[in-house]
Length: 414
Image (tube, rainbow, N blue to C red; front, side):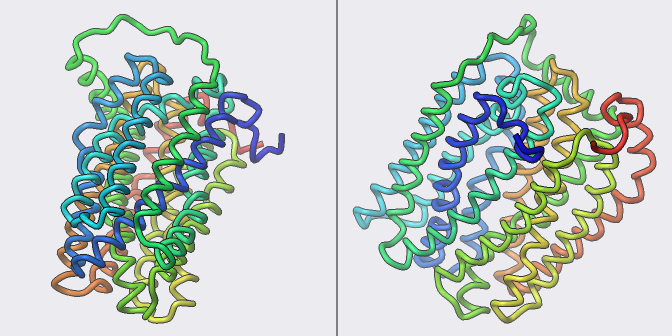
């Protein structure tokens, strides 16, 4: 296999890659359709922020318990349950929309349900990667390709959703998402995963405390999680304001919204390609600082733009910066974390990346409602630049701590 796709030598990961790719196209379609539906029904940027808040706030509080389950239960079987539940909520939302009875609170309630499901599903999926590929050498590439799925599907899902929205309405996007879960369910069911050796479970509070102590006292872990949390709070929620930019500031429609979402994914995919070609974590901490700065600069440029061409040109910087920062942090953490703590430490990364975003959605919606969407994104971009500068000031001590780990001391990528 080409160097870029070396994790696909694993049959289990190939099944996951195909099934998850189809499923995530549907996920992006639902996310865009839900935002458009809320804005069409309410015309409120604040409610856009509330919807984003509702979809992710459960992750902030429940993801550590998802990580705990990932270290205790059969990950493949538990993922089958979580995917089936996610399909059910999408089907219910489609039924409400087709019946003409859908209201804003229905969309928000569905977002809360999906957030609860994802709080357990995402740590499970991340922790399951090593079991799927069966080799620690392939793990960094598997993490990068998993990130590619999320962002590569964004190149397809939002533009397709924009087309379906313009032609048929939101209900078809929700129905397509419900159907797309079938692909990952079939893939998980077809996998052959050897039994995982698990230590005897102790009290759940003791297990969580063990992971918290590791994250708090191991400097690279503590610093990376802090950066990811700040970037998620400041940069990730920009997507909830894209309907405002698409319709009110750029004079477009649902198709414009789809192209804006897709443009951000171009940069994200470029970040994934870069990360997938690397071996090990040598100098990855320096790349993390630069990518966080890229996200901040891209947000400021997008906020100041009033032409679709310029907006589409600068959004890749935002996607590149967010993806490379979070995926690099995830790669470093999964490389150095002890196997017995993998699910729990991964869940902290999930909570920092996805769990802090809802607070940002709410704050960004509030600022946009009172001061305008451009002002909100300029403030977010400036905050990202400050966070990148803080992390850069700590690079030397982070590098020293990582240098004691064999994976970090292996030298530059082959």
